[in-house]
Image 1: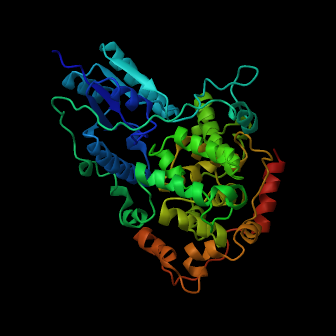
Image 2: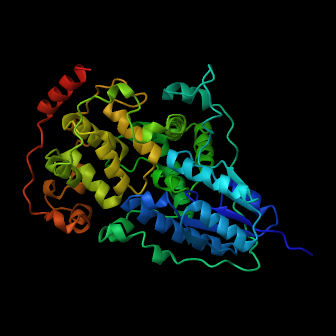
Image 3: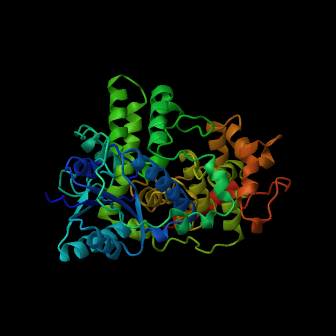
Length: 470
């Protein structure tokens, strides 16, 4: 009896067994499955923290596969050539993957599909990274959405497929292909001593992601809308990290939030709106790919942002602007690989408006430091705050860090948690910054706290003058 030909499943940012359409279909096909991860041309462009976090996702996912009788194959090189070689080597007939929507991934995947198809293989991309395909959600005029609120109204009552269960067993091929070793990829090499600090804060893998969701549903979703803007409170789901690496599927999260909404949990609908905000980012990245690198509104191309990375930018990166809430947030980023969403808006506003620095400087720094880095959300978030992006109304909004601190961190719990110079007895997270930051910065907890790079009133006036000249 002829043994069925294997299916290769190429895992990228979908490191999970449950809520995985391609894996579910392959498991039900009664054919051998060869899971593969590639260190390809797109992955090579990731920043230091995302590469480190990717290595941890791969490590945990490899263990998950072992639990269902499978293993993970690692290969390095251009995606099209490596997948073609692997298919020829293993006798696989089908190569499947979960669809991606940012321009770099689309370009890579288009080349992969063309190469494999031309060689006689069956290449197929599956949905699974988003709830709604960007081309399937349309305005009444048949176009794409450029404003979030109408998109929310269009999708909020649409059916979302229930998440597929995880396979209990995966059929192995007769012979496993050769795999590279994860440690040889050295994905953590750019993190240097910071990797040890990040390890304490990351919640890695499918099991941890599920536990995070359960904790949020049990403890925080009821008051999510009212409390989510307070950075010192554990009031958000924390799932951005796990969604970024596909350690939990969006359908799983959606249906959990929907159940909570139907049960009368007050904050559930707002939580669902935040999931659709993520969808909106990818909707725009697909339809207007220039959002990743260029001003979404072309009329902002002549705005006088400086792209010079000078001493002021370095102080912003170091959390030494002299504005406590901004500095605490930048330290949080470096210590945890994460930053509270309210804090992201405040530090972005300070950089692009008070300092009049280009949003791309911040976008690039976040892409190097965030363990929940997401190309679409990062680009849209920075442009939304800067004023040149979609839905950025009023574009001249300027966050005042002092009033934001009084409103959302009145007791300075967040500021003292991460800013050693402002805490009477600095805690471990405030001190961890000095263990994680580059030695070349020569920073110490005993350094005097700096005066502001630019006064808040002065910076606001300068920004409004520049914005008023538009």
